[in-house]
Length: 265
Image 1 (cartoon, helix red, strand yellow):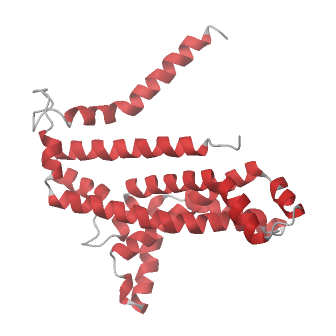
Image 2 (cartoon, one colour):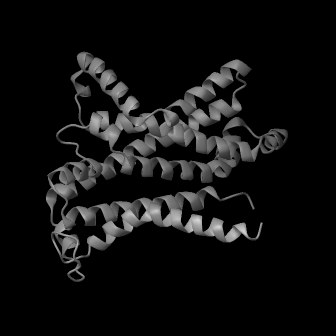
Image 3 (tube, rainbow, N blue to C red):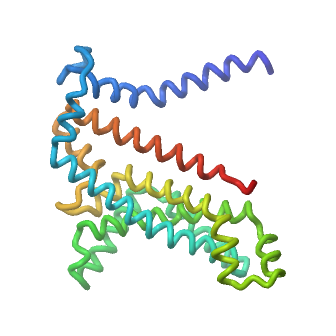
């Protein structure tokens, strides 16, 4: 067993290098003074300065932040309510399995299929109301659609770890339903809710496929802007933008992972 450990370590390190070397390369070129080519011509921050002076990029960043914040807030509220309903309501066994399947389905469904289904749905709704023209509203609704399942699964895992003994003890002490929820269940559930919200926010910030299918001319997000810019040719500004998006994502994932580790002391 000891002889296998160096091999396992080498494979693990090689896998990490293979996984992260493209991101590291993008970060390096974002501070390279060369505008074209792969030659290193010195360190510079000018591409980041030019990035923050680009009004189109700043508008796309604000759109991404707005969509992520609004969709995360709604998805967290609905996902938490759904998790509580699935875990605390006495569903029949077969119906409970069906509900579990429906919650997991958006997670395993390819994004392209979900995006196409959203386009068809919004097309039908557009015939009823012009409010469903492709734009910020459809973009936010599209993100909420796939975020709810992730929030529900994270919150349900927290509920499973808590069990129902605490609720029964509170009931034995004559706690009302309102008191039980706001003073017992919700505080203990908050780490799971925050972790689910951080995960939903990260997924929304990085989403491209669903955003590409549901956005309008005035609701371009950062991933869509990066995609359209890459098609015209990769510039150092795109490297800088990609590095900042990657850094923001890493920070959010770390925070979500830390929050999800919280347990009752």
